Length: 89
Image 1 (cartoon, rainbow, N blue to C red):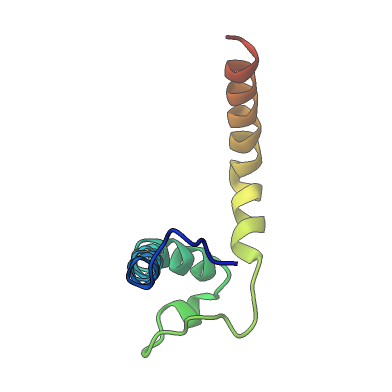
Image 2: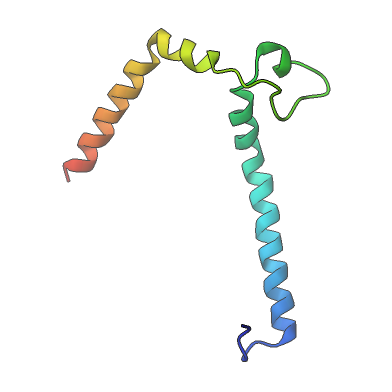
């Protein structure tokens, strides 16, 4: 139900503002989405031309390999430090 104190002109401005905010969000968040999706690609898909946006077969090897190389200890250390800073005012 539309508010009665807004005119049609105001409605168009609100729609325009939300469209602009949505467009800016798309522009600013697309590199983060690209990095997230690239983490699931194998080396061949990363360097193909034209680029592949969505991986054909998601690969979790990079995450497993990162955890094997000491990433789990880094995550644990970060969790301990962040948790202690949160609990101690």
